[in-house]
Image (tube, rainbow, N blue to C red; front, side, top):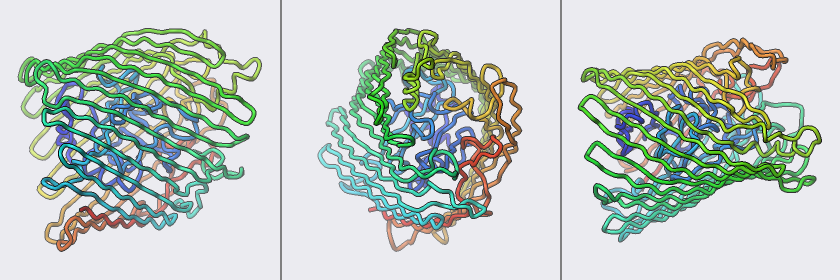
Length: 619
């Protein structure tokens, strides 16, 4: 579970630009495979997931909505806009093998428009499933949660022979509406999620590796009129959603000092059909490509250089509206240098130049260009203590909007004035430390992200998030404990504002804490542990003339979760897991859930006490 160990799975994990990155450990991913994105980032206070159900879950990094980060899955850029009442970032933890969050500062080779950082994910390969020396393997998972009678089932099959690999994955989760800690039924929360992945790969004896994959996720069920709101008086609406990603990857794995090419070409699409007032459909898709080469100057010094491209489209159509579109194309050149000039110093610095062509709903078109730069450094003050710092200045371009509000442009007098929009630009700073003494590791950082001219329909404003993160981990022979704490404050045009006026950019999170403890019991072939999720009271103090609605204090909460796993010694690869989530039946909405700061607002509460059992068979 130690994040430093997981960092080593990243080929660039020791570089200075990765020093502030957050890695999701293998054990955490394994634990989350039958859950959702909230389970993936459990225990990481700086990454908050609100929304209670996958369709509505939104992810915030240092208080900033992940829509403002560059997101890639198997190297393919993902879509960063969707109907604002649902999530643009629905992923199935069951097929993930690697997750890295670069808060604030992202390297130039991570991707374009990373104004507040990046999230990088990779899906499982056949080699992750098949045991060494074997040609076939897989696993079957079954789970049941009593709160909502939610059943989950998944199967993974993989084979490899003579350089060829095939992996097939499928998952289905179904259930009814759950109840919160007070026993209130949270309407519109029944599970109905289907996902699948097919991945083909071939690797030659000389190190040329080719991968082709396709994945799809569907969620179709009756939801609250606004899917991210709690129960209301309006009738339920069927939200039909579909998310797809197709990827082709090539890499030369046995390159030398000069020639180590990588190629990625892919397509991602999210489709939302939510007939709120009329039959309607919003689609966002991205075609992306990247070609890069790594120049290995020495064992520790490298330069990655290349070119990337994306073509992104957002469209909306309904019974009364023909298709309306916004499109943007971006081409970028980049180079990132990572080197260690001395035994104590690690330096990473990079440059990008992006050119963007944009077309708006009303026939508007324009082009924008800008350069981006980043610099990160770590210095080993002693063998136990290291200091780190980083800065980036990023061209964000002009991004497409939420496609469910395109039809505003059809109302006379309310059309967007594209001519008044400017490409966004951000500055990110962080300053931190890491200290190690045996099994104890302590660290933290102060951070600041400022984004100028973020787009809000036909207007712009400036957005800022600042605060600090702390962590402490202690590992012993058969267990570990980890504590993380995050304190963030966000503002719009210099004013503190409510969640409505931060929508799609940030959330008033305040102080959040997460604690995890885990202990192996070898004598009984068991693993036991628990976690605490905590948020302190947050009292909104709006200083903007925008605020006209009454606000309320965001009440703090403390949620305890416990689990136990048993591995029968007679059955190789079989694990049984029992879990009690929300042991004390706390009634709460996660701090990152929309609208909790509004008086009288029915937020989408998290489930009350839930008993979960899971069985896993690996073969």
